Length: 209
Image (cartoon, rainbow, N blue to C red; front, side, top):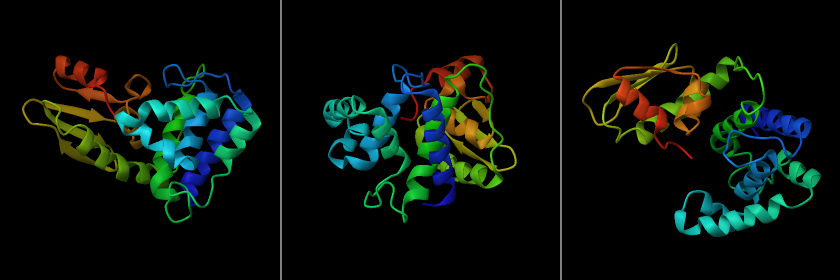
């Protein structure tokens, strides 16, 4: 595994171990145990993982996730900590591409559900990696938003997307934009500049995954 995917995985599993399986997460209705089971399905159960993205397969994927979540906690955590090398999601050739964003987001899902959390100061390389992926995410996720949307990470760059019209500016550090655009608007520390109605619509939009 490459360094940022590996470091975020380790930090997440260490935090999960410290907090325990019943600790809350940002994901509505999910405990740490539920999130761990999601990660196991994603990497180890390709027959069920398609349900994460494809609505017709969602019910089956959720059944498998709940079955895995009901298993032994220590074993579940070990499966997250030590991914299979045969998995298309976690082998050494794909790990950094497929898991840097995934494990950063889910690490923050756990961190930001705890009392008195604060944003981390991320390594410059991780900021850059997140911005590369998030700038693409912004173009895709917000392409149909009814405004001219400028997404800006100071010191890293900006992208312009949306359907045009009035301008709305979304500004934040790469990690904060990553969380906002993945549907974690309520815990992402960003600034939105522009018409209030459009800003409210963006804060409440169904984004990401």
